[in-house]
Amino acid sequence: MRLVLLGPPGAGKGTQAVELKQALGIPHISTGEMLRAAIAAGTPVGLKAKELVESGRLVPDEMIGEIVEQRLAQTDAAGGFLLDGFPRTVGQAGILDKTLVPLGARLDAVLYMMLDDAAIMERLSGRRTCAACGSPTHVTGARSKKEGTCERCGGRLVQREDDREEVVARRVQVYREQTEPLVEHYRRRGLLREVPAAGSVETVQRRMLAAVQGSGS
Ligand code: AP5
Image 1: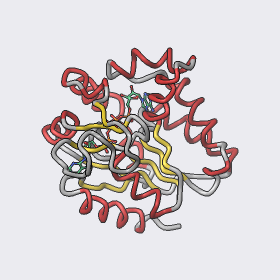
Image 2: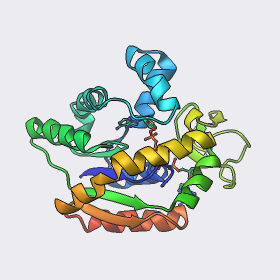
Image 3: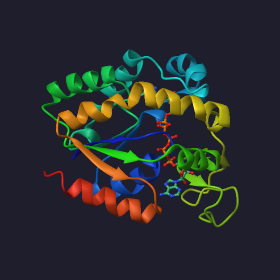
């Protein structure tokens, strides 16, 4: 299946992707993770993206479009993919459509994770991310057996630079202005599946799988 995860920062896209990719046997492609890896490695893309990402702004459509195009051309994405964090503007949705044409592919569904602003702030201010594998966790969740380490790989848990309160506020504003128009864009195309993102991780997971199963193919 070819799926897009759409939703505000902190809706739980990365959390749900971990289970969904296993259940569906498709790669999880997170543009945020790719950019953070490029920043950490100091690549030319990382150097250009660093200031924008860490201050909560979007990197230019052309830059992210090129990265996604290269990633979707890899063999593991031939049978399907779970895109997380892309597209994020109407322009990027056009880039995705153009990228899929030569691959003879089309989107099956856009899973729209809906969450209110208070819950977004609560989730992001308490988020800790594994410096090694990128898995998100939350300070209130007793999910790590050893405090400060990732339950999946034992890596060190850190706070993302863009999870500082003032940056989160900007990310939410950027989401409302530049990304939310995609909701109507994909609704008009009949691809949108609305998934309430409040509730436990397991509850949301069941809703996500039900939404995917209702999407055919
Ligand atoms: P990106 O990494 O994509 O950030 P985001 O979209 O803001 O999403 P997040 O990773 O913050 O949240 P999430 O929805 O994955 O939530 P999570 O599962 O972690 O992008 C970062 C930056 O890169 C952007 O700001 C931009 O600068 C740049 N960028 C990326 N893509 C781009 C693009 N296409 N174009 C231009 N620029 C781009 O969960 C959050 C917290 O909640 C965690 O602590 C988790 O444990 C907890 N949680 C999750 N689910 C639940 C639940 N059900 N109940 C309780 N707690 C929960």
